[in-house]
Image 1 (tube, rainbow, N blue to C red):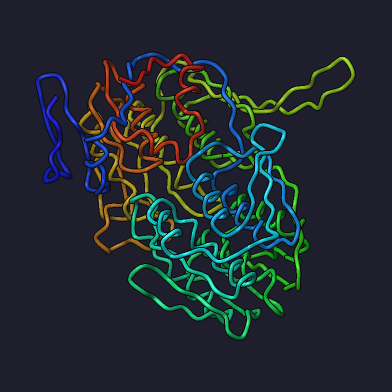
Image 2: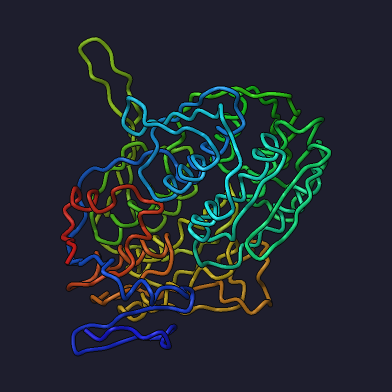
Length: 485
């Protein structure tokens, strides 16, 4: 197979009679990955069938780990998935003197913050570029040490995702921020104090920043236009367990009364609703039947409505606690393709309680199999439709537009971003060699390879480990024919 060269981003990078490597301009580092052995061979065309389980939400667990820095006693977190983001945060906590150990239960972590200390710039920079979590260390480190260093931030290539909201909020609390070539140096010479702050956009990350900083800032903090995703509410539950005083008002207003000290927590996080929806989309795209243990209906209501509108079926099983002579039952949701044709839909991503942006990429693969024209308007990230180029090369018919194809208020209209898509279906997908650009798009490429006829090679699959625990083992449990070459 012809190897990709670094000058072919945005088109087919190499071709032979039987294979091609597909990349897109949303993945500037994708071609580096293509040159490695990080590849999964996928023999498509087999419906996924069986049962898998999801653990704690990726978008909550890493933030819960950071929150442990604020306590003056150990914290205990259950159901932690074995994913790369967890390892990154574990490493950063260790650098700052937090002792992190595995608990007795699988997926349990214990954090002892008794000896929080400064870490060298060089040590912290080892983690630079591998995660965007370090920015959330600012508030806790300012409270514990009076200063913090944050390296250049990494993460998925789905748009700039600037940290201006974070820095503006930290300055409002009284922090000083010095930008240097290696990163950000922060200090709080006069301590941190409560403030009134309104976010220009209900950013999840900035809301987390304010929460983690305000809980021990002197006085009262009022945050307006806050994000209210389930993961945010679960983080508030953790902080409240630690001794924080937080009120969630109507109209996206959160009020935090600062307290002088916090203690550790014991918490089992909400399950990962993104992973659950990803497996649901995979079941639909492959005409399969997948039960996702741990999935919760309440956090997935918007997704479930769209899933049913497309033509998928699901069944919710409530958890049943064990009793004498009865082992009990773990709750979950079973997703399946009922046969027949799928329906085209129109949807727009939005902040909670809208349709989650991380749900759209996996679902779009299933929409390539729906009859008619589906419309997807992405209003959260401006560069999240680049993955559709690879789907088109596999046989999909997807057009992307700069126009806002929907009525939801959008920051990207008339700004030259291709953030709306029209999917014409059904399309017969065929195998190809793919280079995945980012976490969620990567899982979508994997779904496409599973649904396509023939054998695909998916490069860069280790990116999927950032957010999907043991995904290869789960694929095997569902009957997928995949292998490492």
